[in-house]
Length: 629
Picture 1 (cartoon, one colour):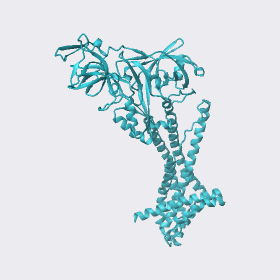
Picture 2 (tube, rainbow, N blue to C red; picture 1 turned 90 degrees about the vertical axis):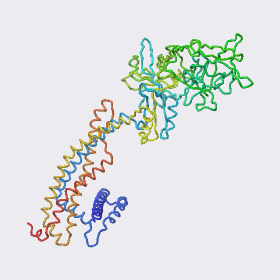
Picture 3 (cartoon, helix red, strand yellow; picture 1 turned 120 degrees about the vertical axis):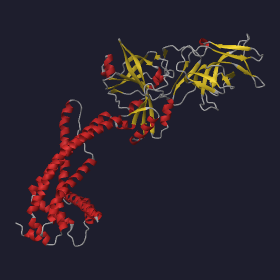
Picture 4 (cartoon, rainbow, N blue to C red; picture 1 turned 45 degrees about the vertical axis):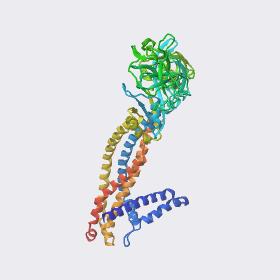
């Protein structure tokens, strides 16, 4: 029973809204041919909703009668609807300012694409690092679209007679385009390369290849290690880090640990970490025809120690915290084929690894672009005018600390190189320089300061960040700032809405007063309608219709008034903003969900306000009403 009554009331409210829309469209278009095509579907909906029980007055007639009654007291009706519209307009205006300022701040803080991005970094002093493997792991996440690394170093800048230290960031062009960085003059450099190879000497032990890539490259040094061969195992020693390279001998476990350099070589089978090799000085053995091994000795009977490459098979790796210090000596005893015991003494100064210098100076690679994008703060420090900055050159060297290198004890400094300014950004706070990622990578950097992860859609960002944080990394996103801004303005909108509700409450009291007075004035009319056969429920719907019409019309008028008031306020502010060079500023914004909420609110206010007079009208006796003076 309750559900039937609720369904009937909802149907009546829908009919009222559609009928008012139909009447409004008819008055605007004046029933021409085009207008008839527009209102024809609405008329069909009205006829469907007006189907009621037989023997009752048509609800369309009730609505028309309510409109005529309101038109008969036009001044009072307009004042009542005007008060309702003013109350709604105040709410709409204040809340639209809250939404508008929120949109304005967010548009200044973030671009749409940044809502799909998060920057990851490592905690200070932690064991994790962002390297090629990290990038590969991140790309394996299904929701991730791309990963872009960034390197941060210190640049020693020289320009004419001025010398300064500034922050230098190695990035790709895609990284700059994805960030909230826009050049005020010039353009970004064109370089998306992250892979670089160049020959260089590995601590005096021979030539190798350094490579920065998405995957490890042959010859890429991983770092200095100490290692020991598994007991009763024989390991091949080759001339190159390749299983097909020339075999120069065999070696076995010795007491203590041996020092070497771990690097990537050609892939080999039989090992979980395929491709890893060790370059070291080891005691050499020859394999005899009967399958036994004997130490290799020279003409003087001294054991032969040679440099070579060992595949990481049957080898235990141990990376000490500081291998650059004096390693001491390792003494082991071996037996020759003649049964003589010989001692092998490995002096630290003769071992494969010597003490690393405090600072190593390296040159930029041949593929370095040598172009830079700078900000206005950097130009101010160097005394360069922004209008004359493009094409200017400055000299810089990059200082790289151990956190970005495989060996934390190392410190690199690049040879001074000339860079050309190709773009200028408007940031005037902290001097910053952006150089191609490949330039910094070419000097031997294997770890990155941070990486920018871009997900496929905005809705996936939270999930991806949770996965990244579960891996131990720290994630930061502009979405956090947007959330804080949204929460702040959400509270502000709530306060503004509460202030506007005061005006709406006053307007509702005015409507209640109007309907109550209208009931007293129309007591005889109510008695006459009942005497003519109108049911009490129909009388109730008549008064509810009047109150709901006032609420709906007041709500629509309030939305239009609040919207216009907000735009006028924005126009006035924009007049001053244009003179300041800011441009047009729109501080008013109305989401369609908010407008729909306001319409529902105005309908509810009208329904609640008219409920008491409508119920009171149903209790009036027809005989008493006809005698009422």
